[in-house]
Length: 303
Image 1 (spheres, one colour):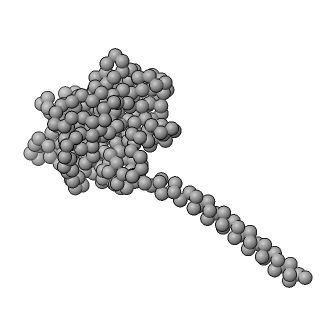
Image 2 (cartoon, one colour):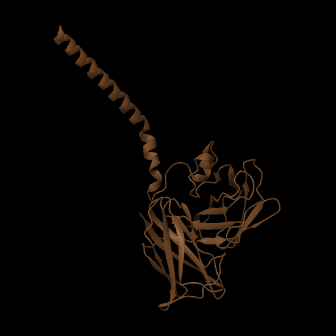
Image 3 (cartoon, one colour):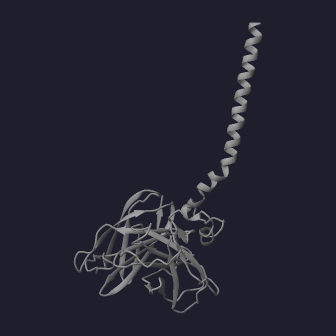
């Protein structure tokens, strides 16, 4: 009798364990898709799902925005424009509006680095970078003055901080894409390098950033082997640094750690850097000497 009891008890225990394992495997199987999606944005190739502009218009996508500048809407704020294409080979004005959670155009913006709106344009192959400062009409419509664009797909970013409403004091970056008609000739991304030259100046960037962590990047400007100390103030500092991720064009605005103090600066500049994901990033460093603005570009790998 005792032997039969022990046998029955072992059978019940085994059955319970099997049932628990089956439930666990079923739960894991049901969540496998979300586990894959969680890491989909960490590669160098963009997802084949709906474009960011379309995703931003889907119900609930405002709250789900990743904050990497790839959505047209975030926290109830939306970048809207009727322009789906822009002409090739000629200067043009891109008109857009930022609407708030109430659906009305936002007209109250805080000043950031001497401007109420920073606007960026970059082609899908990370060429043709432009950083301009739009003007706003009384009705809240902004016009960004763009230089001639080459054929291809371009992403246009609006970087701003609302000065009223629910988003007051929050830094935001929204973006939309436009097509420029014509035969697009993609340019391969230059290899990773810590140095580059522009207009006779050599720019060296040092740092070992890791994705999802705050790091310091240091940029040094020299000319003919000598340190450059005549950098002029530009946007309240001595240099402005922006970066875009290869593949999906995620945006990273790398903040300078000091403001301009006097008419001359350099040769070393430091930036607070946070990159959302690993991979190659194209950096654009802008600085001014003798009243002329220079834009140095280099490719940085983020681990």
